[in-house]
Length: 125
Image (cartoon, rainbow, N blue to C red; front, side, top):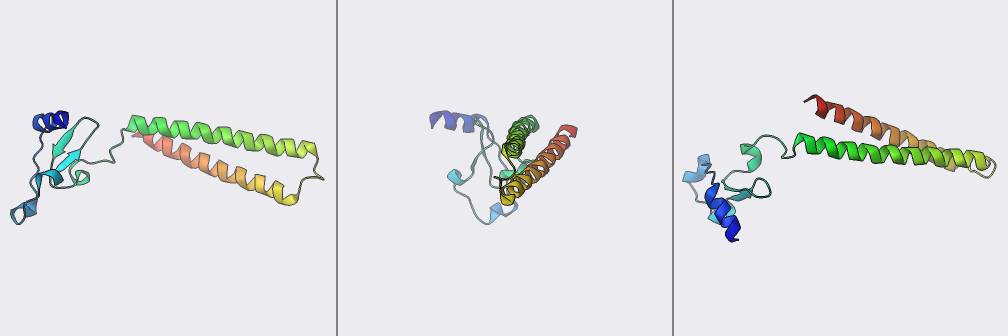
């Protein structure tokens, strides 16, 4: 708490709300965390004060790339299972199972395309 108090003391950001004249906000309700080590004092929500969603673009790109990699691996495993099932014998396979693999692959392909489009949009910013 002492470290936080010193950070608050060293990095104070006073933002006065328009309606502050009518009511006073207790000090403990005005503390907000910007990053891991920065606390500021403000009456409004930080979303109104600081634009954006709070996630750095580089971090968001890295997370999307990781998720895209996992989806591609899962898509490859589904294709492999489908091919192994076809090679094992079509007589034993039920039509419902073949349809299930096809639907899963189609959903996975759509999800991968959506993630790629989102990633391209982030990289162009």
